[in-house]
View 1 (tube, one colour):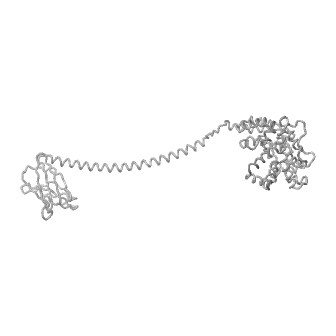
View 2: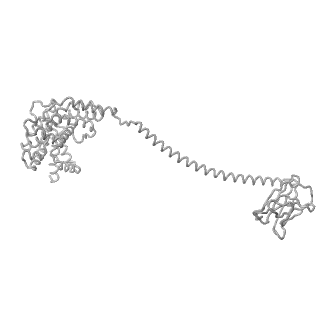
View 3: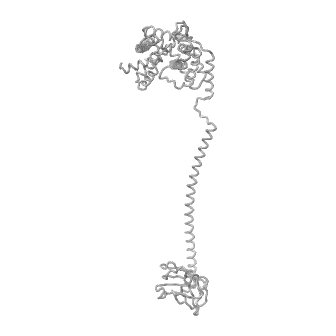
Length: 205
Length: 265
């Protein structure tokens, strides 16, 4: 099914992926200009991802720098068999963001500043802006994903959204929304299975 | 879907959304080590689907300094590796270490080689020395035989046969081949006793009742024929006798000891 997702989200994805793989090959060969190009392609998307989780620009910029330094230093670890360059970079970005979010230092800082529950905190979920991303291919992909999410039950969708865009763990979601932990897990599992299925189905259409 | 597979799927969904607790993440990583192909595929597909969610984020622009810092780091390390080929630069200390190792190995090799050569040389020297003494012994023998042969080859020689005396050497045998012209003689003796360490045999030429010393010799192996060259035995006498007596070491002016052999011309 991955094949369908990749080759079919695909009519949009292929062109980007070809470009990204060529960039990764150059990065592995220590071509710094390739890293510069990769940065130009993804920095706004990734910065949005990081900021939605960490909320603070300074922390988010530090994390973005860490992500691209990692891409440069660990390019050899990128494995084509496991997925696209896009998936690798986004997963890496989220891992770094979540690691920082859950670090003791960050939690201490958070206590002393704003609360996530405050209304004025930078708190973007997914965007309904007309052109959130300058890349038209990414914009098309966003439309497909949005459509897919709309086909998932609201309860499942909400769990996926707060987990993904706010970086909340299952137990945090359980506490925050007063939902039994087991139910959170079930909704997350069923929601992800459905999303995976829908993205593949959309492609087949 | 089996319970085990159900567990994997549930943890997998939490994993791709980074929503597991630490212990659950460890549990998932443990399951992943034994995961089958379908489970790996499920993970890759869920990860790809989750990553697509990122496209829904509102894009934000970071400060330009972020890229500058990233590029500084990249370019700095890029300059350290100017080529793609894995060239291993030899620094001076590595070169020195390599040279030292090479030197030590070469030295050990040379010492072993030299020790081997030394042993071989010593063995060869011993062999040469042994062969040299053999050659010297043979040369002496040849020289002595040549001298004896020279006496035998003389055209005019007198042959004097000596017999053992009944008391001292009943089976004794002696022969003198005398080259009067050359003044040399060949003495052959057999079956006379070995001389004690403080004694010698002495050959006497007796002419007109007067003994003249013709030389001293020792017999150490009575079982074989012993040959001796007698030098400066000059006389014009046509008659006389030869006798052998045992005398003090180095001989005596006149015969004093027992007579062992006697023969007339």
